[in-house]
Length: 153
Image 1: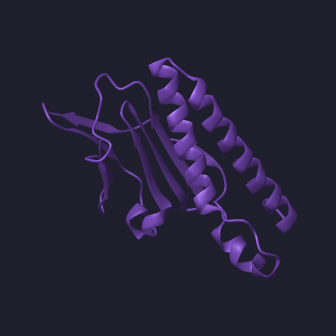
Image 2 (image 1 turned 180 degrees about the vertical axis):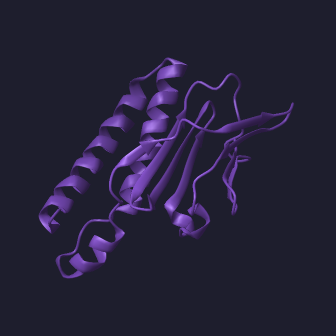
Image 3 (image 1 turned 120 degrees about the vertical axis):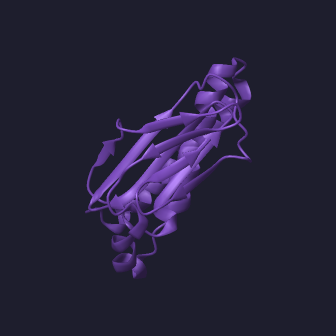
């Protein structure tokens, strides 16, 4: 478990990583590289958003909000698509009991990232890069239901 000083250093490192990714985005000219950098930028922004700078008096509260144990890559999923929609179905027992902020999806024009935080002491992640066709970021959504976590990129 990190102490307050360790969390502050980690948060500062995330801020520096985000600054560097933004700088690289201003220099990148290739579409694929820009997509990769945008995905990383969104991940860092989410991580920073979910780990605000630590305050010494709130150490107990911060410990409650830390991510669970280790991260598991999701490899088992269902896929359905039509001319207008793609649906990804992922089954994770108990996901519907998590607070909404523990299920996060970032969409870019050609990718999406899923992060499920602290489900039974584990984090779950899934990343799809280089989708065949562009998707509507604004029209993309996620839905958590009792049987599965559904994503509509």
